[in-house]
Image 1 (cartoon, rainbow, N blue to C red):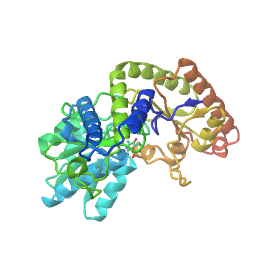
Image 2 (cartoon, rainbow, N blue to C red; image 1 turned 180 degrees about the horizontal axis):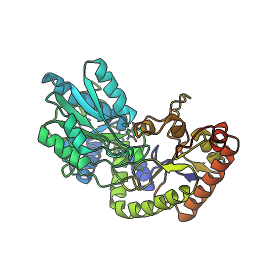
Image 3 (cartoon, helix red, strand yellow; image 1 turned 45 degrees about the vertical axis):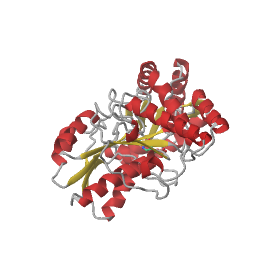
Image 4 (tube, protein in one colour; image 1 turned 90 degrees about the vertical axis):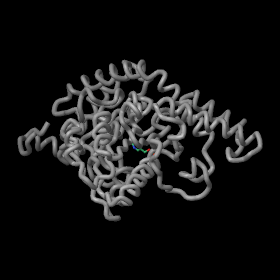
Length: 394
Ligand SMILES: *Cc1c(COP(=O)(O)O)cnc(C)c1O
């Protein structure tokens, strides 16, 4: 099997699994308990906090462990909104291609009276900082823009956006779930106030993540209860998961440059190969994108059929289109970069992992070429395009 869906989730690293099982076996006490067995769990928890903080340029007390990226996104945005509301600032700026954990939280806030402005992400899938600046108003309480997009992999000018927000006194949140462990992120250098991350996107376990909140920013509780996480996130901490997350992040960070170099070479080989398919197009900027992300549109086919046939060939990929509910709505990300419905439907995301080989990349290229040609063979849309009844867009 060739696993090319690392943007959906990653395999846990061996070191992370070892740390997790060791913690479960040996240090299973409650970190809030005062006897030494509990305090050992507390030490593991605080060591993980220190490790995670160090890697992103934060202080340990600025790290709050959560159940993952979605929770961190919800808490970051809800916190900034609550702070804004108290000052009568109820305007939030974001983009149309954020993860649903952000977009749905913003929709909920809209129902509570907030006004949301979504800035353009343009054809290349990249926000223009000056357009954020122009959108900022006196009543803007938050700008939230993702670090790297989870479908098309485009990397945003976070440092510039952060600098603008700092200058204007507006809080800046970034969903960095796809970036952490893969590209350099430093909350100080990048002018970030709030940041979300999730362990299972960097070879850690599922169901654990963290929220970075710059000191002085008062968080709103999503979960009420005990005084864990400085009273900002109740519930007994997932100590084994948190320890494994820190282990995975240390490992990924130490190998980041080598991994990125290899992935970029493999990514560009994949892009070059798939570009040979007629009436196809890469989605998102070719350069300013995650080292492991490839996202293509092929005219005249359905992404879902493509995926199923690739699965038969042992390749795990994902389509940007159609959510699991079986709805046929194309990806909101592809629509945001201006792809029309028909074209957006024929999309595929290949998010490759660090251990991919050149031979595997070549096998993917060969397989996608075969499957696209096969599907076009009996696609009514393709026939219309070939007979001139419909015009090619790509
Ligand atoms: C995966 C992902 C999330 C959600 O993280 P979970 O830990 O699965 O809740 C949020 N944002 C982005 C960009 C993601 O890729």
